[in-house]
Image 1 (cartoon, rainbow, N blue to C red):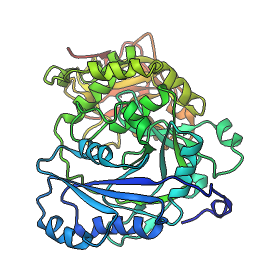
Image 2: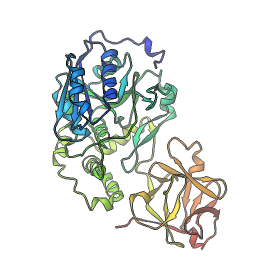
Image 3: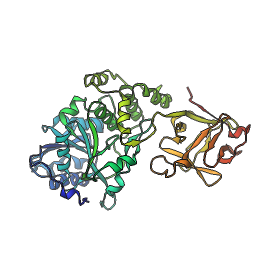
Length: 450
């Protein structure tokens, strides 16, 4: 996959060497080797200083002696074997620590790079030494290994971002930003980097403290790194003329509640007063888990003179429209007639009534613009009498259809239709009905269980 405009670009004659870091754990040998060979075949030899494979405690015997046999005549490839699994994040960190090149690329072990992938990345790092980059990442079909990339005209609308609970989501570029671009080969600013790939200058990465050693296994590391880079003087970008592909698959680094600890650490260090919102959302779990000492991460933030989290939001607002802190109401939504709560389970098709358990699943927000959202999903009418949930960013094409009002009578009124959210008598379903003051099944209240 190559954009015809990308073929016309020219890069500096002298491009620095890179070190490539590929952590793996019980990956299929053929898939791992496919990743390695794609780098060897599609990268100029003089640019690749070394490829470091980090074995994070694999139990698959093929990844021991058999892998060594494949690699024994490849001078630029070496394997670091960790006796005990330390998780994806720290396996990456071990590889980055070991490389001698000034620039590094960290890739998942089930990826392919295409010809000409590295020159646009390194050229951009020479222009922006404090940038955090990723490529134009396509997908690899798990059954056929066929590669697919979205058209550049599609990329110009959406980018990776985060929502109120620091869950990864999609953001939407402003139309004015899209129209301001002179061509599609220019870097796209991202809110957060994609998790499967990190490209940076090593000294800058280490100055920012690398990955947080207090975070466990994987999850939220790309959010922490992206916020650091934006607030500490850098940029986060996708380079559209650098093509790679990634296979989406089951992650062998299994987690239970480590992901929540990771999110809470990011919030405690980087989100300033906004951390209260994260802590409120994860209240039940926060009582059970210790996030550990974050003093060293706070020190790193101070030493780099990093700006407040609000600066990060303002940088993203330069090219995107989003609601992050503009909230009118938040918490679980309880019906006063049935004493049941709105719940997006058992499916994302539409909310139902369910007993109020106060978990983050039932957490909802009514934004200043009137969106009623459960994490990434916003509630919309489905026909005249029922409701559905759709992705807030990508699936809402008419903003008016997604607008709700919380009235003085405690009703959730759909603005366009003038109908009110009503709890049905079966204590299971939700309906849209004509608004009637005093109808307890149309009266709702927000609360957060403590």
